[in-house]
Image (cartoon, rainbow, N blue to C red; front, side, top):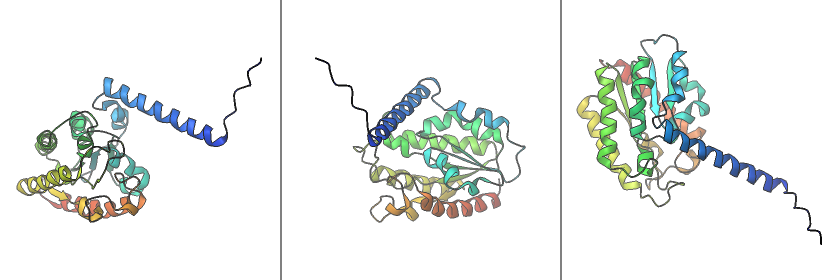
Length: 240
């Protein structure tokens, strides 16, 4: 008895299969980079060599996926020597590893640091609040040693990480943001409070401003854009 031919998948199934394959390929790529290029030094190495000489108002945005996606959502933000150096999924430990290459060596007048949410999500394994704060402090110290003004941005609201729903993020974010605000004040840094403007009142991301409760959509970036521009103006007007 002959077996029936395999069923040809319909368009919906083909799309789903394609999406699953893309997700699997993306995961494999991420795992390979975690293994062989933990700090993501390869991501911008070539691009850094093609930058024109720095102006006296160059600003580098150091961060994770929120920073990486910003340039696509709002290209106008990254003009006039404002440079995006975000890498999706990165924790503060990874950013610290590439801080010299992707910030110091670009000779900016200021750096915008938006970091910590992926540490809380456990993207590179378990960590502690002390470790997160220590990595942020180290980036700040490196910047200041090279006369780079610092904009220290709050962690944005997260009620639940879609990829780590078991993580209780709210209280940890509150603690780190409170620490950052105090640390910035004590050290003469510009503290940029994104959290208060994006908070839905329950310490989650305002739904209409986010894609998934973690990442801003175009409207969310529009809110952040105004805040960032004001912080940049403040930082560049401050003494080195």
